[in-house]
Image (cartoon, rainbow over all chains, first blue to last red; front, side):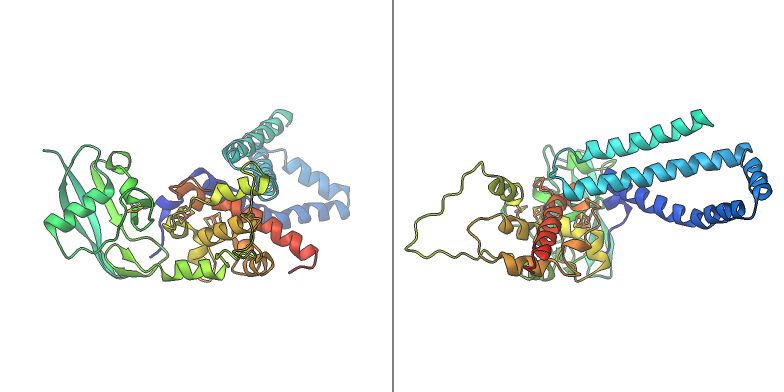
Length: 114
Length: 237
Ligand code: SF4
Ligand code: SF4
Ligand code: FES
């Protein structure tokens, strides 16, 4: 018999899920990223048009989500590295909170700068 | 008298939950509830326990979806609206009702070379291991395992890869890696470095979350990851 969600409902499992899901979503975004960079190679006009398009509020919102995903994936990765390479026992929940906090800070900074 | 509604798994892998009503008592444990059912309501119920004081590791079951040692789990702490759901441990074959076959679990302890291998004879003096030495402290952190299987039952990687040695066997291997008297570490590290060994762990920490002895197999497995990497770099395994 297999476990259901009740066995998995704890902070470290949520951290694993956030790291995995942000990784998958970021890899889905990559083709779009390269496409935008490719426009720059084809000349200024194309890129400018794209940049103007990216000023729309909805696109800005999507970019904020993107920054959040990046920050979540980065801090999640740092958390994993710390767990695998440092001697830890009792502070792993603190590490998790730090990862979540840094992610939010990155998202807010981006929002303030736009 | 207040009562508790209890759903208990009956059958083997295929089966169903059966409903029982059990008197609610002060300081009642989940094992008390199962014992009441077996002694008073249905003597055919199969379950397992021995010590009743959290030492033998034989009474673990899945209580409201989570693996627990039932003899030391108070109903007060786990009942949800005076309801309990009691099922056998996950990730192990079900013999009948609440009894699982622990054979794969303990076979993996052997697979992880979980047996102490000494190099001294009876003519040698006692080994003196300073309690404060770093290796001893690392071994101490994992040594209180009672072999209950709660960690194994909660681990997703065990469910995904039936060959995975699992948290308890790897934790045992790590305590021996840190036992300065043990002489079998080269073979042990080789045994835990494979596809089904420490590097398969995804650091979900469900094992550490559920261990009733507050052991962190995840930390032990991280230690094995570093030790096997170091041994591989030195060309020892
Ligand atoms: S930390 Fe590793 S051993 Fe523990 S539950 Fe997660 S995958 Fe399994
Ligand atoms: S590590 Fe903890 S949960 Fe796993 S078998 Fe040992 S005592 Fe039980
Ligand atoms: S009966 Fe021995 S640990 Fe619960």
